[in-house]
Image (cartoon, rainbow, N blue to C red; front, side, top):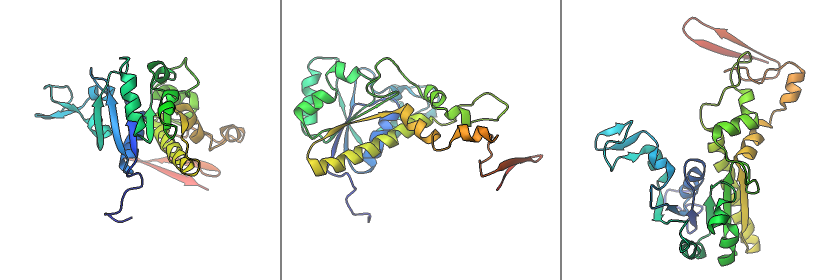
Length: 263
């Protein structure tokens, strides 16, 4: 692809109902692929990420907001390349506006707690009714059918077993430094959306793409068979040492740590 070639998703429109991190990262990836992303935010406060520190403004980068026009760097990062519209989804009239948006859209992405979008009247059923070709992606902690559980990255890291693979073997499990579940689930969401677009090209109809943070992170953890490794005394949580075929030794120097893997 040359610098002047159209991007893969140019001409497609995305209605972005997401907030915080996981959902906005998914729509950021879609925007990067060329899609027109219309981000829907509540008129009061907007995306939760707008309150994330640090901020940037007249005084440069600051840890606390000093002026009303200081902007969260997190929000700037995740909202770039997107259009915006303010809409109170709790207002009954919002359903009509949502329907108007969906009629001309190709994709909807939401990351509410499971069941919330349906209660607001902006779920998959409502979208499909006005646009049978719509691809509707739901990103949640445990999947669209689990309505009694909220999730944060640290909870998913623990439940998936990812923490079992982190830290030193003689210490408690350690959270992976980056929000792994929050960052990985959006990638799976985009994979699902791209697959649904290809299937729509063949069938003419859209579908519901349901991605859970737990499922996404568990799929990574499940690549290695930890039970089998335990059976032969291979450590899953070997610190900064990479697991190879037989054993790993860490050589600690005075001023630095060197990690050597032996096959």
